[in-house]
Length: 108
Image (cartoon, rainbow, N blue to C red; front, side):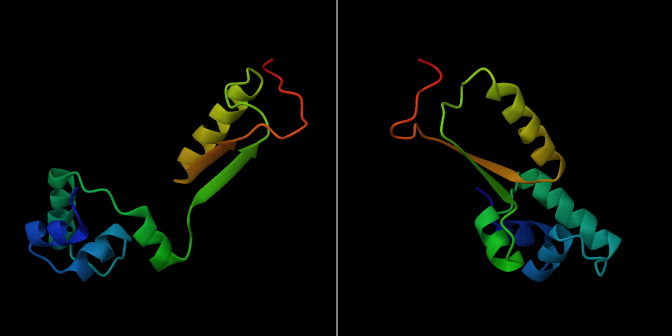
């Protein structure tokens, strides 16, 4: 898996410049931006979401906790719409499904 250091090395720019490109900072020349974007594509670089969370102090994650099975027929379309909506705004989803003690399981 490629790192920001690999992208900087491949593009011939500093890590700071790569970071500016990734964060859509306007203080980067078109030449530098294009070289960094080319390196990102060639290396199949994907930013580390944990590192981005530490820097931005935003996780961009939505947690969904359900007391029923995720494959319940009623919730499948709801969960799919939630996923599509979160994708539109570049959020990640975390689903947790756990049968709650004493609750009836709807899939039985």
